[in-house]
Amino acid sequence: MLVAIGSDHAGFEMKIDVIAILDELGHEYIDYGTDAPQSVDYPDFGEKVSAAVSCGKVERGVLICGTGIGMSIVANKFPGVRAALCNELFSAKMCRMHNDANILVLGGRIIGKDLAKEIVRIWFTTPFESGRHLSRLRKICLIEQKVAKTKIEKTCS
Image 1 (tube, rainbow, N blue to C red):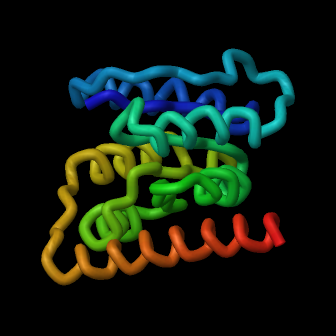
Image 2 (cartoon, rainbow, N blue to C red; image 1 turned 180 degrees about the vertical axis):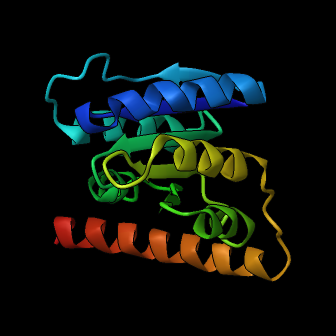
């Protein structure tokens, strides 16, 4: 699987650990930065990873910032992106099983290194259950389309 990964300065160290887990799991990745612990703006990196997932360049993504909240907000602006902030194991499993989440978001200042590694393992190895959850995902897509159309109509009127 090809994965996009990105972080701000607060997630930089954790990103290095996550890359090691991706290697261990046999996934290829594109690192969209940041490449140093100096202060940067998380939207810049969230946009790059989310765009790669949204357009289908990669199958999944991982974003890391201080709390994970900012990256989650950025990621979920993109069509087709289902970003889930997971700071514990149960959410990591359920967002894959029930929501087919395609971007994992982590809080680099919220969780420790070992927990982050386990969250990543669970998230990448848990399949989507489909079934009754597929119809719910279709409804989310319809809402997304309706919102996009409404924005266009408001802009054009």
